[in-house]
Image 1: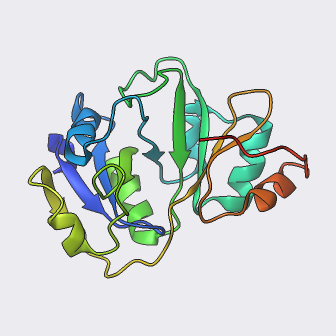
Image 2: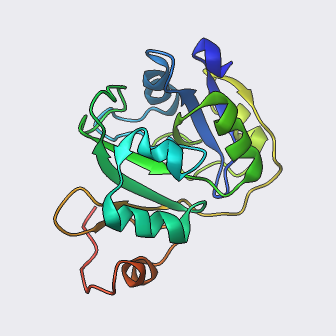
Length: 193
């Protein structure tokens, strides 16, 4: 399904997500329609490991420290894209949000399928799906759902490392103070948003 450009429901270590292959032109764009997500809100990308992340973005020292501490896990890092990474993910075309999920089955899928554009499985603005049945009922645009039972996680924390100072874009599973501690304990206010 992913190789044919379809949208698939997948479990992660946080909540169920909708996924499409980065390798198939136009596949990530389908996620906006299925979810009802505005294209100004960028899609994050799941990767199998930090090495796969370096194919898509320049990590830099701060991202490397956070990746060592929190990947696999519930942390999405917004980074500068590498030159030549021109997949349409919405939002700023010079940045990309990356995460390595902690669920072994999802990382195994990523090793086979490659990086996947993702979004939580829900209509935009509604709570994320925590069961495969909820994902399946979301839309006719979902080709299939991988069932991992009920998930009880909360969405990932999202940290933007593209500016002079790290910014918390979304509070999630990880506390901002815990993230800052890994970055050296700098006292930076969370970003609005």
